[in-house]
Image (cartoon, rainbow, N blue to C red; front, side, top):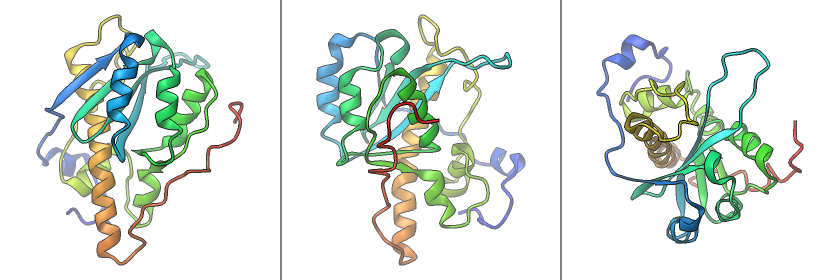
Length: 216
């Protein structure tokens, strides 16, 4: 594992093996499939979580979340929010306190989703805050993957157009990789806590986000 006290540089990251998700990916843009998909996901106790938004290049311009990604340990699920809306079935997962949703800077994702529709998020784990317990320097997903998993992940597609009518294969792979990495990081950080004798149960933000949707 890379020394946490040492600054993580691009040169260090570039020396690591490049990895991306190679498993099954389910892209959902038709709400008629949601019940079946959500029923399968709801069997999971832990989900990797992330969202994607079309980038903004003009000052003051804002865009809504385009994609919601979940990884359940078997498959990556990409929900095209821009096409089918923030469906009630998805809210049920994000409001279920018994299903952990692990992501980085989850407050920003939740704030973006709440702009679409009000919901009461529970069971979220912010990996950046967990990493702070170990005084890890550099806590973006890419840097966390480098430090903790000792792999490099590409961020090349981050600023691509997530509102494309049809997502490119590279976009799909990128989005799935982010949710997959968050899932792996959750279990690795949990293991680190146990090894250091800290509380073995990573605290979830079950009540942190139970304010109304007009949160600033």
